[in-house]
Length: 193
Length: 88
Image (cartoon, rainbow over all chains, first blue to last red; front, side):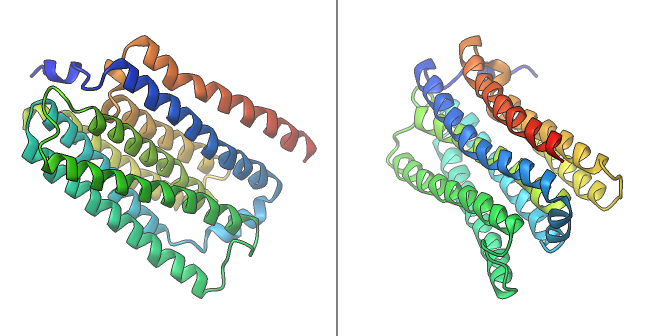
């Protein structure tokens, strides 16, 4: 079936331009780290190969599934509020928040295992980049969770409708960006080192 | 539910691609491992951008805002890596 609703953009153009301009700065923030990763992976290929085998591939895989699913829940929430379904939006925001908690919990398990093994940011170049990149990404997840809480409070008060859903739309774009960063971090750190 | 179908299709494709990239990582393809992993990651990022971030319905101006920073990132990457590659 064709959905004309999908063609309609919930947020005004100015808001969309604003968030994409912000995401441009975010891309270059993470981009600098990806560049450092590429540089040192070329100059220290052996080290990167050895060290990446120490990471738990299955936990990284699991976390990828969790984050991808949280992107689905926020996307469905946005589609719902574009149709004026406030209750579905609230459920979706709560699910997204729960999945983000799950992501951070798995991250906590990984990091505590790393520290227990004596692997720290200062251990070597690979672990330095690993902690820096997953740490900065984790901070973005925490910021996203704060935004979800704020949206949930507003949604609880009935602030969003089919006519006005800009904050939800914009937060959704930010959240998907954080997901995309992880889509690259996972193979680079866990799979190919 | 039909209205949300596209999101579930995109999501299940993303899950399958994640499983594929993990499976491929256990094979020894030499230099190809990195290329395959990056190609699959870019395919996944593209799906997220087009379907979840609605770029496929986006107007040209906003598309420009979304694509332009990648050119800058490309300049940074190429400028840095040319040095790294020719030095070693």
